[in-house]
Structure formats: structure tokens, C-alpha cells
Length: 448
Image (cartoon, rainbow, N blue to C red):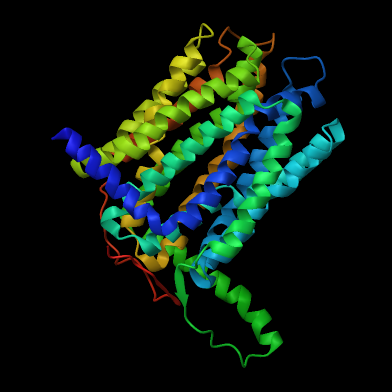
């Protein structure tokens, strides 16, 4: 009986993915291309900025500064991109956001000197402001256009599983490719993605004709800021007036505040404490990725009809707390591998979050709701490096007040505890009454 339920859930999720092949294929390639550079970047930036040193405070601070700047601008850019995708279609916005990752890595293909690494950070900051979070949120909105509400959780888990599978493939490539070839392969894959989307991806919205053809140039210039302000206010009202969406905004904020802080310093922490290099980084990332493929593609579609998104969300948040404590208190080189195993569970935070938000929002406002909450999360990207970067550098130095090199990671876990408490009192619903106005587009729902 259990085997039959497993097969049915798996096949049902796979069947729902078929209409989205031309979206998921380039996204998978894009995620592979970006992931394969993650473990290599630590060695490249450390070698360029701190030659001969295993610990590089400069790289930690620059990463923190980059994350802060991205967080500031994403608060505005993410909701704006979501509104534009609701009004002008998903495809143009996906093409724009997915193309921005090409330029930073092109610099590292050219040269990996200190000057080029600084230039990479500048372009990567701009790229992250535009693409970080927005690609997935607009893709989620695309899914909501073509998949019915009752099937979205399974589809979101499948897409998150594909993201994890992409990370595993990217880490495998990073593990076995020569370091000098990694960025060259990555740039080729990054260029393929927007080209494929341009020719094969079908727009998921039927856009209503615009009524401002007779307006003069000056009138259009004046109207654009007014329209953007009204659309931003409408997105805020959709979230604020819904208890579910308002609660999820807080849950997402505190979770991201802790997790983004850990992610910004984790690899540098492991390199300084245990001497990890790109091979160990790739092994850790692959370990999380392989396990999360199973949990997102198979486990979540089976559990969701039985226990619901809230129980899955709370369980995943609990696993993220254990993940942080084990990393922060790691006493031997094998402990990070044990900690990484909890990634199999905590990766379910994202698909559960997207499902709860999507079910509480009408299809015509998916882009606004998803990206507005993602914009709220970006505030955490602004705040976390302010504490994590100096705190991590302090406890990794010889001037630490006491011996606990992962103390900053333990502190970050407090934010995940708050997120868990907020998730426990959340009451998910499918109330769309907070959608304020009609939209200019019609989603292409798939009733199969």
C-alpha cells in the first residue's frame, strides 16, 4: 500500500512537470552553472585577496558587505520584478534576470587577479540584486499559472528537488574539473540558458491590451511612477491584510536572517578551523544535495496530503536549528558531515513556504505576493552580515574572549528558533479575499 502511494505521488508530480519542460530545463542548467563555482570561489578569492593564508578576513568582510548591499536593494527590486511579471508576463522577466549571471563569471574566466576579483564582486552584487530570489519567485508564479492549487505543493517540491539535483551535478563538476576550467564551463552553460528560453519558453499569461496608446510621452513618464506606487501598495495590502501571508512573511524573515548569516561565513569558517578546501566543500554540498533530492521529490509529495504544509514547515525549521548547532559546536572534522545530513530535512522549508503563500493568494497576484515576501526576506540579507562577519572574524582570531570558533553560527540559530515559534502558531488557509483589484492578465490554468 505504501509502495503504491509512493509511486502515485511520484508519478503525479512528474506528470504535472511536463508542461513546464522548457522552463525547468534552462533553470536546471543555470543552477548547475552557478553551483559549480561555489566551492571554487572560496579558494580563488582567498588566494587573490590573502595570498598564502588559509584565513582571509578581507574576503569574509567583502562577502558580508556584498550581502548587505544586495539586501538593501532587493527590498525594492524583488517586489518590483514581481509586479512587472504580473503585468508584462513571466517570460521577459525570466530572460532578463537569468542573463545577469553571465557577466561576473566572465571576468574570472578572463583573469583571477586581485583587481579582477574586486571587479567580480561589483558585478556579482548587481547580478544578485536582480536575480537572487527573483528567478525562483517568478518561476513559482509561472507554475501557479499552469497548475491547479491542489497540486502546487507537489510541483514546488519537485522543482526544489531539481534545484538540489542541479546542485549535486554542479558540485560533482566542481569536484572533478580542474579549477582553471570551472569558470569556462560555467560561462558556456550560463549563456545557453537565456538563448534556450528565448526560442522555446511559452508565455504563461494572456495579457490584456494596453489602453494608453493615445497617451503622450510626458503623460506616460508621469504615469509610470504612479502605477508602480499603486502596484507596490496593492502588493503590500495583499500580504498585510492576510493573516497567513503576514505570518509567513515573519517566519521567512527570521529563518532567512539566521540561515543567510550562516551561509555567508560557513565555508570560510570550515576552511579556517578544519582546513577544508574545494574537495571537502563539494563533498558536503553533494551530501546535502543528494539527500534533499529524495526528500523533496519523494518524501514531501507523500507527506503533504497526510500532514499538510505546516507540519512539514515546522519539522524542517527544527532540523535547521540542529544543523546550526552542530556546525557551530563542531569539535572534529567529521561533525560538519553529520550537520550537513540535516540538510535533507531543512531544505523542505522553501517548498512548504512557497506552497503556503501560493495557496493563500489568487493566481493573478502570485508574482506580487511571492516577491513581496521575498523582498521582506532580503531585509535579513541586509542585517545578518552586520553581525555575522565581524563576530565570525573575532572568534576565528586569537583575540576571541573564549574558545568557541563557531559562536556566531550558534547565535544565528536563535533566529531559526524564533521562526519555528512563529510557524507553530500559524494557521494556513486558502483565503483569497485580500486580493484587492482585478489583474490585467489571465493565467493559463491546467485543469488536468
